[in-house]
Length: 317
Ligand SMILES: O=P(O)(O)O[C@@H]1[C@@H](OP(=O)(O)O)[C@H](OP(=O)(O)O)[C@H](O)[C@H](OP(=O)(O)O)[C@H]1OP(=O)(O)O
Ligand SMILES: Nc1ncnc2c1ncn2[C@@H]1O[C@H](COP(=O)(O)OP(=O)(O)O)[C@@H](O)[C@H]1O
Ligand SMILES: [Mg+2]
Ligand SMILES: [Mg+2]
Image 1: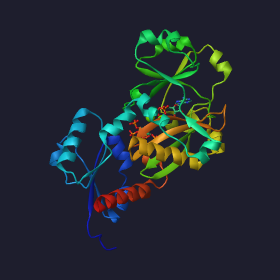
Image 2: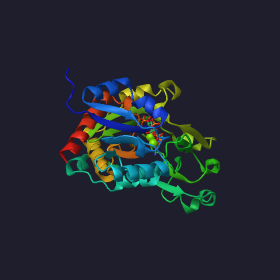
Image 3: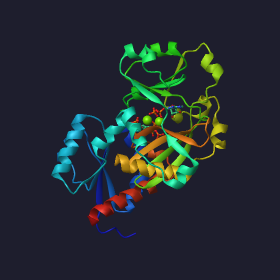
Image 4: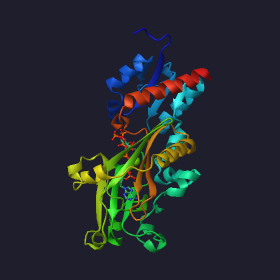
């Protein structure tokens, strides 16, 4: 095949685990065939000394990286940075992350048959408040999920607890978000967004919690990254997964494109559950920047199309 006339360089700054999962030879090869070289950025060296890049992809934390990227963008206005660190930061706090869902509006057709929102939740900053539920329980009933307020990608930020009663609160370490646990049939829907491309897949989740369980002696249960565990570790919920009906694609696309616009982000996914008490009510529970795209079907094609699209638009501008 003839070489494309001009080649583009996309620099990527990713943690080693992310680099390993995302930068697969299949992605590098496909991008290369379409005139794009994926070039690693060495985060231990000044960004200003690297490049030139037509585009920068990144999932790195910290003020130093943020400042380097800002300086680089100022010095290289033709370089496209996907996405802005300030916009990404909104997803690093489990309250501001979901606030954005409240800003969305459904189109009339979808709103007639389904509704969406977020579970009831409250943020607790200190142990005094936590141990005095009269201050915060208004409208929030057990069981609740306790999530670290910060969602910065650390192992700690994924450590959750399912709390069945007041006694279970004592083990929690604020700052946390207490969120109503909503029975949802043991299945979550993960919606991957890549620019204007939207793909929804099913994943295993926590099983429903019965009234008896809430009354039982156990006060809490800890867990972490449940949707990434193999099925046999989750009380054999695999049948639930196969049988679960997908949410209406129109609704999912509406929410995805609404979030795209409201967050200004191009690369993210969000987790959705279906409230079994209502049936046609969907709740967004988590939004993640630059998720594990390699788990998405045909991720190489989807991402390469996205790169070409972004670089094409940039050239035009
Ligand atoms: O590692 P993976 O492929 O499971 O991807 C993780 C995501 O899994 P998912 O694609 O939603 O199944 C994961 O999504 P969840 O939080 O598990 O819903 C996060 O996006 C995670 O990033 P971080 O630790 O929050 O910075 C992602 O981790 P990193 O790859 O960014 O470390
Ligand atoms: N409000 C909720 N009701 C029921 N299950 C939930 C709720 N929030 C989270 N979960 C379950 O806990 C898992 C982890 O919560 P999530 O907010 O997605 O954190 P993480 O950022 O670690 O993925 C979800 O994938 C889902 O299985
Ligand atoms: Mg999640
Ligand atoms: Mg998350």
